[in-house]
Image (cartoon, rainbow, N blue to C red; front, top):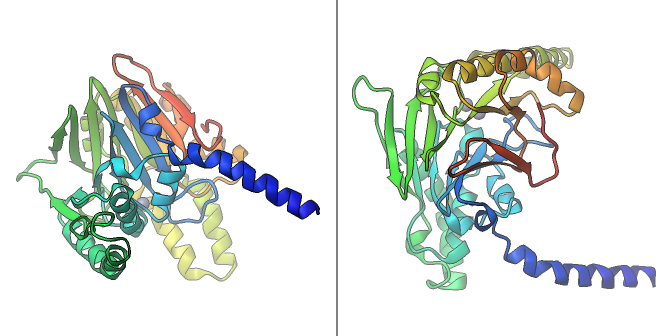
Length: 346
Ligand SMILES: [Zn+2]
Ligand SMILES: [Zn+2]
């Protein structure tokens, strides 16, 4: 009796909520300006609060995805970002945590509106191999979907991704790779050695600007390109906290894993280094992302940041999945909200 009442209430609730869910469109709700949605703010380490790296730049009603780690497409939908609005994906480098979700992001975009045009994937040399691999892996799935739903709903011409590869001119470490509808995207070289190429991107729109570092150590080229930007989104790790995880892995007999954890600080910036970069570039605000290791307790935010707040005195956040940072056109500040109810970290 109780169960059937509970079922009836559940069915009625879902019926009431479905229209709202189906018509949800974050991009339409955002005001004119430049926005970044943090889809994944974590790393390959399992983290309840943070997925693999992925961000969505939103300008002029369009969405540009930067990297697509595993489960990106799921979080994109949970953030009410309509996949049909995705204009292109930009890749920073080809570590698996940055590309693992590319196939399903493409699938969701393709079937959202039955787009007959392929999704553009823009990146440095190597992008064509990654795209070809995903296209091949998804070829059977795509053929089933077209066979099932028909060419009108799932047109075969739009199922595969299209790689757009760019190379820096000799001696150059930055270049404009996209200039459309008032949005200018500048790619620049960062240092994630031995990973090469490894890039960051700067986005300029209506006088507002956001820089995404990609994976890097403290980088002078990043500081040069970030000069005067409104918001810097920089990768960050805590060697102190990582050392604790590494020690626990070693004591548990996981020698291989401990060695990998010991190597990680070689190619990521620490929070204080990211803060130094923000100060030296004179940016307006800093959001730390690619958080390593996971921070399961709020009390760990302080140890993770170290003295970053002293080094950079502007607004500083620890990014979380579901964060949306908005830079209104004609304004000067950065507004943050979180769609999943996570409070501001940092
Ligand atoms: Zn990486
Ligand atoms: Zn990474």
